[in-house]
Image (cartoon, rainbow, N blue to C red; front, side, top):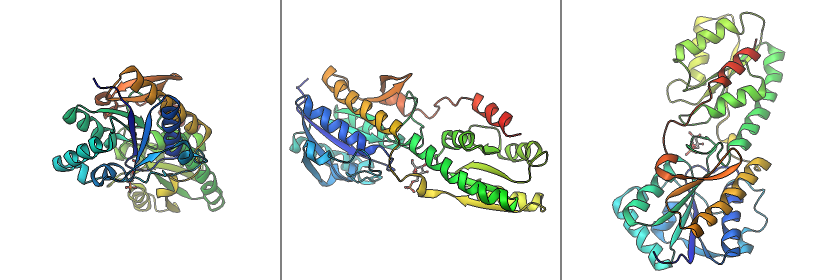
Length: 325
Ligand code: F6P
């Protein structure tokens, strides 16, 4: 295998707080260890359009505390095609890039895996998504910051909920995973969370109505995982119909959740996994995601990282249930 000299770096999919800290870490650790670094702009689109520039340590100065991604990001349609990936490969070869570090979520790492298999190219993933839905890492870059943002929002919403004695359904992101909803519900002292990992929709609302508001509370907050059909609006409408005495409101937090300065935890996770990515390349690792488990940096095959069944700790459901009486 030819020696790797130049490493490309890109961010892809939804931006997440801490991506800049990861870009900084890969760039600095790469240069420290003698590699050239090239920045690919606008996710995989930048590979297809050859939007690639050399990076120095100055390019990443002062970015550790900034949200978003200085490399821009995209959900590339071009890279999803065979022709797009061929053009991407040709551009990588022309740029002299021998390895690629991809910072992104499930879709982005799936793209990296496919590309790595098709072109026998060294791809290293970093878990960059607020959803925390990548297998084999305890947390993903952006998840902790977003959880804190949701918690702050819910603390504020509670002022109105209590003052007006209302039920609030607060919808949070997470795509198909309930990690954000369940844990932010615990952190904000919400009365319930409705998540995809739990039982059916009907059961979750009925169970909560029985248990919660009817017994001891006149106001409450339910955190709802986003869902095309059964989001916060759906549950609010149901309560309005089935329990017309209650005053119901909906708050959809939307992209407010994805922005902002990364937390210390996310900066540290991004820094450690970024350094881990360069170490992995030096060890000859290929086609893995760098994660952290039990405070140890781990290498997870990309095929495993993108599994859709990351374990959900069901004890968290019990914790919320018991504390929301
Ligand atoms: O994957 C991150 C995420 O924020 C999801 O939680 C959400 O479903 C999705 O991206 C929203 O994507 P977009 O910003 O493209 O609307």
